[in-house]
Length: 135
Image (cartoon, rainbow, N blue to C red; front, side, top):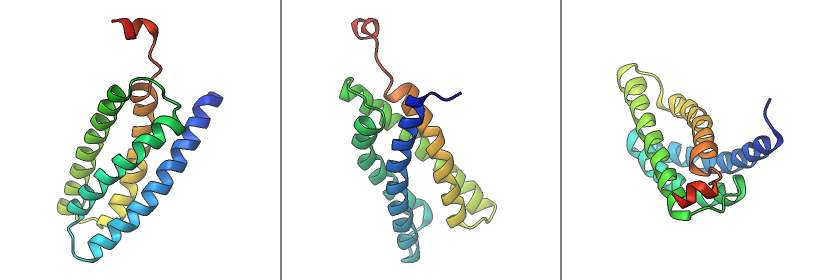
């Protein structure tokens, strides 16, 4: 059973993510329609998405009041992993399997959202114990 705190965090995370990804997905479609490659467009927009969502997710979604630099380093690490995962999927699914990049990227938004929520909840914005801070 999912507790009320997790449901609340997920709802706030979803609002931040939906708003951000909706804007970024349309920007992705626009950039690719103008001739930018799918992987280049994803890369540029991925960096923008990470930057814009850190503060919203840290304070509003997860209520994190721990060390900013530690949380930011973990945030960048998970989004770096997410970026590489997204890039590999685009390379395999679009370049080698011939699937439409619009559909692949749309699906990846959902897959990455679930994975990144769990990583943020349990690692990036975890509640730090007093013992952890002293060691």
